[in-house]
Length: 193
Image (cartoon, rainbow, N blue to C red):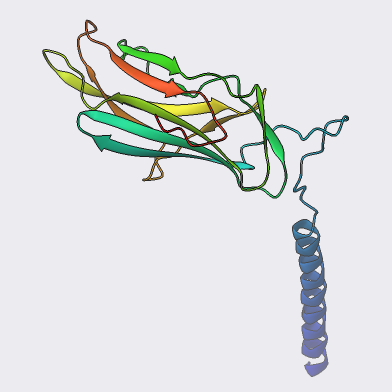
């Protein structure tokens, strides 16, 4: 009887050791698969477009004397150089089915059709809109998300100081009064207007 119990324990321990060996080896193999950290360069040596994991998009908002001012930053947080188009504007996105009275005014001149961002380099833009519309009547808040296209297939969403993508823009309920959001071109230097 003791021999049978000993043999059974030996089999169970052997099975456990075999299971442990294969589970650790499988785990090791999955965790040590190389992860590409750099997009390949284009054939002519030009850096590839930035991906959303390469850059950080931040929006800092200040309220002052009936106005809201925002500073947009796109920072290369990767260890490689990458490119971002400079010939488009930051886009405010909102529910156009319920909000019909926001207009967008693009300001400034295009600095570059394409920005090449070195690691830790930052691009800048800014925005302005009234802090409360000038209307006679009721108002409501519109959830606005600001985005920027960084490649033919990717766009960034800006996060504010609270790490929130939604910016509250106050608009009139009546469409007779509009709220204008001014947005500046992207720039390699801070905008001071």
